[in-house]
Image (cartoon, rainbow, N blue to C red; front, side, top):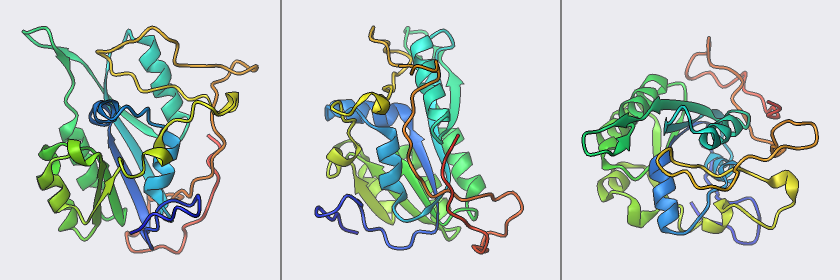
Length: 238
């Protein structure tokens, strides 16, 4: 797999079939912040998808029901092709607030194994080593995406391929120089609520979005796992 700097097509993955993307939201945010990168999730999804067909793109995060700015970001994600899986924060005896979604990520990866050909886990958490191994033994290709310095070595070792987001930072970084129609809210962890507004609205009072074309898997409700005959390219108009 190589990055072609002479084109804008990004990574040359080869044929990857149906792709499912599982993003550990809080883990990715803290790793990206460590590297001073504000992630553009549409760009990230297109790079991770390569030439594959998108089956599902999941985004997992803890939430504070009263945090309007975070709810705005999650609404934007849902309207731009992501399936948001959320869990309310729990307050612990020491005052910290956390929501652990490792089980949800692992269960979704295993439940859908066989429906996708390639799983892309965006996380550096070593806790996913066993789940990733289990998915691989079901015959699926497993890839891990993250910043190398923030990713557990055992997680890299168990993956079929590791995508170092540090190497492609300019491809997934939010571009502040883009015009208004490219205005994207930033992910805000529920425990960190900065003052600036993260959600913009256009003249029709509807949420701003990007008109991107992503190759989606049409449906998998009644599909045999090895049947690719009914896959079509569609435009995400949601």
